[in-house]
Image: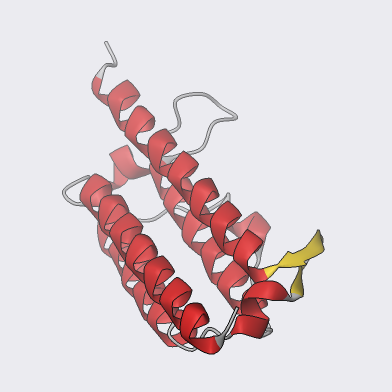
Length: 153
């Protein structure tokens, strides 16, 4: 892969992640604190947790692909309680991170193995694809959690 191809891949992922962030925003907007932090089951995750975890994982992954350090505290993502403004701000920050780091994506970033905390190293492109899929799964969980919340009797 040459540098022009790497830029195209970076631009494609920028677009995909921006669209995903907007879908998270659409799910969060207008929801009150109680709804965002409600758990359908004791061991299930709230909407706030799912959004915070998805965006935290994305940030750490993008930084790993670019060989940048990350101070991610994954465990804290599962204890988060947040309101809509806080979650929208996380999505805004995620947009900025995507723009900053994916705009400069290189061919080496995509093809070289990159370590991620407790994971075996994989090529950057594989991390981008798998993390995007991971976030889409959590978006579906957010949608289902909203449906469950609205269906309570």
